[in-house]
Amino acid sequence: MTDRTYKEAGVDLEASQDIKRRIRDIVTPTHGPEVLAGVGAFGAMYSFGGYRDPVLVSSTDPVGTKLKIAVMMDRFDGIGEDLVNACVNDVIVCGAAPIFFLDYINMSMLRPDVVETLVTGMARACSHVNCALIGGETAEMPGVFADDNFDVSGFVVGVVERSEMIDPSTVREGDVLIGLPSNGLHTNGYSLVRRVYDLEHDASPLTEQRSELGETLGEALLRPHPSYHGALEPVYSHVKGIAHITGGGLIENVPRMLPDGVGAHFDTASWPSLAIFNLIQEDGGIHRDEMYRVFNMGLGMVLVCDPAEADDVLTLTPDATVVGEIAAAEDGNDGVIIS
Image 1 (cartoon, one colour):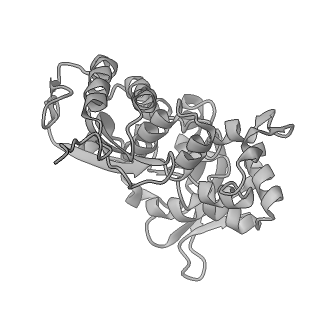
Image 2 (tube, rainbow, N blue to C red):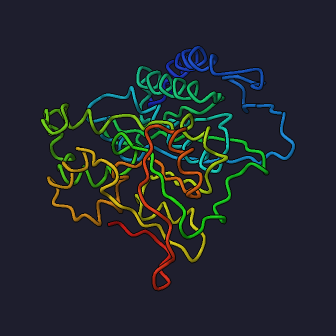
């Protein structure tokens, strides 16, 4: 009988050990004294103090089908940042500070170079927000994904003093909506983009230079999702609510921070329209309402504050602009109106 090996079945244990050694060198610089167990332990351990009544805030996210664009272009340098920032931006909207992050990478055949690129991006993003890349899992599962496709997900934990949590229940009619700009699609809307350009059958549009963008379509689509931690931290005490504009756009995300009885009215003329969204809408023949339901349309975060606080918020976040106001709900419809 011929001896069978795990490698013959598609799992390369030597490659797995090699990437673990590489990862250790990449993530260790993100660790402070709070990290009690590093890469290689069965469970990551973190000790934190200095809080009277701490509330832990957690979130998990993939990068969605943006990953398929990266695979088509064989370019992964920004995907690790996408993963961290998509998760971090979800926990900071309540005033939390991210403290540690974990990742999960699942490939049919381990590609150490790609894993190293992904983890390097994660470590870079974690360092930017003073968050420890504390652990994760890299799985090799032959036959799960076709071609070069794979999956990656992230998990973040943050902490906030209970008395300092942002309380959206205080939002009232007459409050001001302030928007922080996005730099593109971030990590949402890519399934529609792939359909508009029929990328499953022909990926060549990704490498075409588009004069409207000043770069190729693929470069614009792969621009990393930015972190808003640095922008939001100075204004927590001045705002009543914050919405991270992810999947579902303004239409679905803004109501998540609104109490019953009020809605958000946006004036689209108050912030610049990004060329990438204009291009997608024109090339795909997409209705305006659908664009605002799918994409962030140029706003990465939306803040609500009392009118008396608006000047302070705008001073502390120079890139921000007033984009609308809170009004009484119309006909029982507590939601978003785009004008």
